Amino acid sequence: MGILLGQQINLKLVSKGFTGSQTLIFSTAIGNGIINSILATNIYSGATIGTGPGPGIGIGKVVGLVGTVVGQNIFTMMGSHGIAGSQSLNTAMGIGEAFAEHVMSLGIVNSAGAPVAIGTGTGPITGVLGAPMGQMIMSMLSSSGMVGSQSLNLAMAIGDGIALSMSTAIVNTVITGVPSPPTPIPTAGVETGKLIWFICIYCLKKAPEREDFKNKLNQN
Image (cartoon, rainbow, N blue to C red; front, side, top):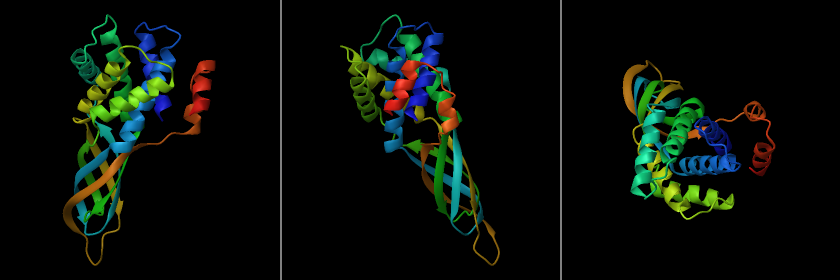
């Protein structure tokens, strides 16, 4: 999952002029750190409305993330962590744009709740915190050999920027179930769940046929 986000980050960075031999390794570490952290801590809580009473299962998507806004949040956090290089803005925008596109295209929310058995739900994702994400990103950078004097500051800035951006995202779900007899009635309720990712083998096979990408794929 993180490796696909890493590939998207890599493509964005390359489009902004990054051509270094370590760009893909850097991007993959960032992608893995972000996704691993979100999967470990995120919680979706929504308000539901529809027909019940009865238990319902929801599936939904994340909306409301704008790549340039995510990038600007990361860039602002870079300044707060003392990072102000000539490529800081391009780095932040590349990561932000890739993250927003990735989450809204591949992110799936699974939920369950009551007493709405058939209907819809909406709400925020919580539990995504900057510091733990920054530490996870730093761990991924270290394991990839990407350790420099500003690595931790960069990792924390990315974590803080992503966490801030996720606090503004909204989940919309569609709920299905079987209302209890005898007669379904309009009702409202709550649901909880998590943001997950569905990844297919076909998607991985369509990744660029580059030896360095294949090697990283085999390691995950």
